[in-house]
Structure formats: structure tokens, C-alpha cells
Length: 84
Image (cartoon, rainbow, N blue to C red; front, side, top):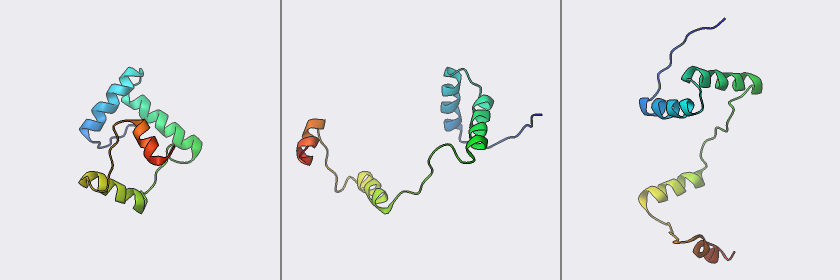
């Protein structure tokens, strides 16, 4: 037996996701059913959910404010700075 439900989602996320699902040959409903099946099988959310650490939050703030950051033109330049 199937039930019908409705959810409120951000329109931009819905449209982006729907385009990807279409490319994969899936409807939005198919994708939701796959997600629900994974949740039921794994007895958990099938991806990592976490709260950012204080260090990561600090780095986000630095990036947003363009403070305490270093930009490298090449990966080799970064590796040299790191001594790798």
C-alpha cells in the first residue's frame, strides 16, 4: 500500500535536485523512496550529519571576512609553504 504525503521544500533546491533525478532517470518520488529505503535499511540517516567544530566555524568566519587567510596560485606553492 502506498500513502501520499506533502513536504515543503525550497524551490531552488527542489528544481536542482529534480534536474539531477531526471538525468538519473528518476522521478522526485522515486528519489524520496530510495532515501526512505536507505533510512529503513540502515536505521539511520544515510549520510553524515554533524555540527561544525569551533575551529571549522572560525575558519568559515575567516573566509567570509577575508581575514587570516592565504591564497596560493598553485598547489606546488602551497606544498612548498607546507614543506611537502
